[in-house]
Amino acid sequence: MPATHALIELLGEVALLLWGVHMVRTGVTRAFGADLRRLLGKALRNRVAACVAGAGVTLALQSSTATALMATSFLAAGLIDLVPALAVMLGANVGTALVAWALAFDITIVYPALIFIGLVIFRTGVRTRTRNIGRLTIGLGLVLLSLHLLVETIVPASVSPDARDLIAAITREPLPVMVMAALVTWAMHSSIAAVLVIASFAATGLISPFAGLAMVLGANLGSALNPLLAASSGERNALRMPVGNIANRLIGCAVALPLLPLISEHLTTVIPDAGRQVVTFHLVFNAVLAVLFIPPLALIAKVLERMLPDRPRPEDAGSARYLDPASLETPRVALANASREALRMADVIEEMLTGSRELLRRDDNRLLAELTRKDDVLDRLNGALTRFLAELGRRDLGEEENARLSQIQTVALNLEHAGDIIDKGVLNLAGKRMRRRLRLTERQVTEAEAMHEHLLAQLRLAVAVFMGEDLPSALRLVEEKERFRELERAAAESQFALTPEAGQHEETRGLHLDVVRDLKRIDAHLASIAHPLLERNNLLRPSRLVRHPSFKR
Image (tube, rainbow, N blue to C red; front, top):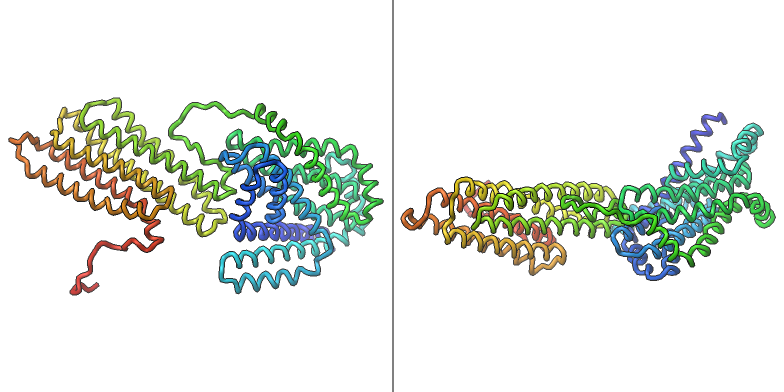
């Protein structure tokens, strides 16, 4: 077989292996992701349970990187401490080694059955979970198929003297081999795939068992790079766990690298098969690190907290506080963080409404400027939240998670519109009143203040509906919109009923009615926050229009 042809086949088979691992991971995540996250969350009370849970979740997901990102998101959200998070990673590394060890057995004969059974389950399944079980079964079959094809491609090269001499020259020194394997594993984003490829190379004799062990050390380092890079742009508390993980990998590699000749010699006498030597060493290496590092985790955590203290930073009301990119790998945590950011937007609206109410009675240019700046804060928060939710929407979300994402988007959009109305409507009118030195009558002020109080109550009710999904509160929120319409009608009638002799200035009358109109528009946006919940419960009419029998479209 020509070398170019063999290389293309090899690349295609590695790609198939990566895709199979991806299908297994996404299938498990979609079918059992919420259950796995709950399992991980419950097991984080002590380090041993956290380690076991990390191994179990990784066995299911077939990705220590996915488990690492999940634990990092919990850590960034403040849901767990650093010690159990580090224990999760030790367990995750053992879990991924167990997966590679199991897949390295010669069970390629079952891949046709797995692919066929998976396809039948996927095509005949009605429920989403059933179809995802079919997806992961197909993925497992593709993993085994790719390993079978890899061996068939490598065998001809392994018997070629020229190829063997070239590979032997490249893999003679363990340190460069380890670094090369680390970079390849980082690029592959899968230590399981990397270790299985290394095992295939060793099993066919393309590389020596000694070189295979050096590559395994590199694969362990490379798999620790992805969580580190993912957390590098986030908060310091989210960075500590990946740093701790790569630190114990580095220590383990530094100790094991000089001992590789002795380890390789011993493994060869115990396990004749070179491929089995590779996966067994991978498993033992991670198990030993877990046993050695679990006892001093509290001390390691203190060192990491001292090395990576939280950054002191000036308060910026417009910067997002809770939208940690690492949480995107754990949708429930990401949605909780997005909800907290939406609540910050509601707080800004409350401050703007409270301030605009004050401007009904007094002239205060400083307060007016401060409230105008709050709309800029609101726009920045909404922009950050929109980008975060758009990125989250590209992930594999369940129906419940998609519904919550849509609800958060609805809340953010309506709050942003309400802020624009306050800024460009109510505050603009307040500035106009101050510039022209106009004074509202006591009745006008009282009516406008009553509407502001009603809006503040509506805002608090909208927040309760958003966070608690309380159906009676949602119904009340929409029903109160009708009451606000009555307040607007009464205010308009009272203004037109008054005469200039009664103390009513024509210009303040128009200004007051404009304020009332804007407040009504704000109320409509607040009431819209309840619409997603009411729609899901079939309690929202598509139109208020009554069809007359004589009307024909």
